[in-house]
Length: 162
Image: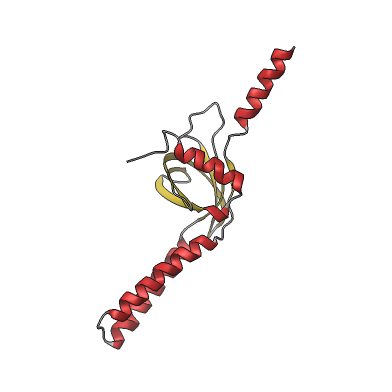
């Protein structure tokens, strides 16, 4: 009887490592990174000898590109690993907020790149249509325990690339 309890304990520990992570759509770290890039671009543009109309044109194009990227890119809200009886790279469930509302997509995991403040995950979307997609999750978008789980995924032999 004691051996059955021990087996149950081991199974409970294994299932607790399954990644099922809610992701906050906003991130102060992302804002900090993008602000730093914008300031660097502004300083470079200020140092360039351009006419006033050229500065205005650069500002219009940059603003249009930022608005397009902000509105067209889906926002990751939730990330779920496949069941433990499946391969780790298949059957990921991704909940995105899109212009058409919240949508559940199915994907294959391609690679995971872990950094100190962010984790970049590359997927091949299977449903609703096939395409590649890379998402970045910043440390302040998830809880400390979820960040630990994502870091473990990025440190696995599967997650390391290049």
